Length: 85
Image 1 (tube, rainbow, N blue to C red):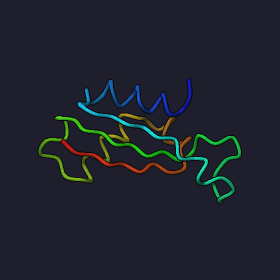
Image 2: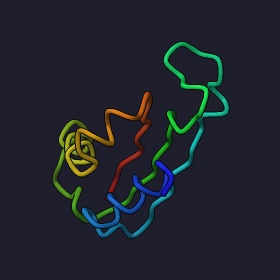
Image 3: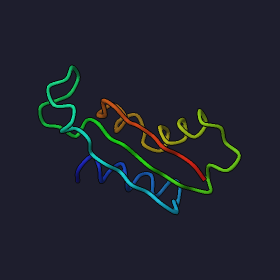
């Protein structure tokens, strides 16, 4: 399973989203410091979930990081998050 798929499945399980898009943007960062040659390091996530109701931006980001877990987060160099209800 690709890292993109792991991210998507973990977030679907944790947040029951009404909308989710996970884009592997690694190719745009090839050759940059910290970007592995194999790719799968830079991701953009758009996630809409009722779970975010009443949570501020920092709480939403922390919830996503917790849902992904330290192993998966450790394999990602950059993770851009667009989170809302």
